Length: 155
Image 1 (cartoon, rainbow, N blue to C red):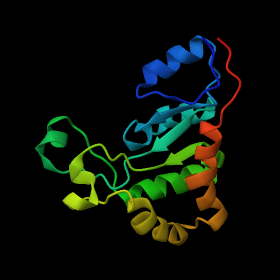
Image 2: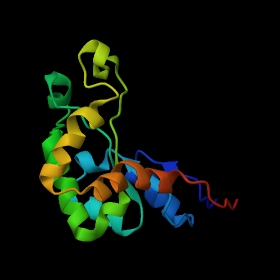
Image 3: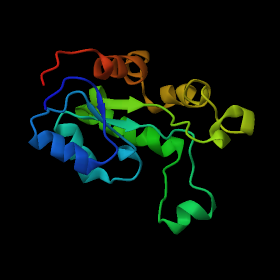
């Protein structure tokens, strides 16, 4: 099956399977890839035309759960630095930014960053890292609009 619908794939293995089946990847986005998959795999995904999602803004590595699984997440500042580098290397049109609010402790009501975290805490820091208003619009609006736009579907 080849589709032009947006496809969110959590696993790089699934993405490779879709590529072998004929999906060209321009509507594929891989969440969490930017937060720990390493630079070479990240560049391969971007160069294949897929989107990568920096979707864990506001999430930090704390507690024993993450440590016991060997997980170390970058800080929001480190995420912005990584995005700046990828943007400068010409990959800005394939980067998505969001915050994965999947646990109640991430909600503002429970002292988490909440749904406004990107706009209230991250966006003000972007100008200091050289992001222009046009860059910010691309990262927060245009890239998402493009990946989610309805396209022709061939089954």
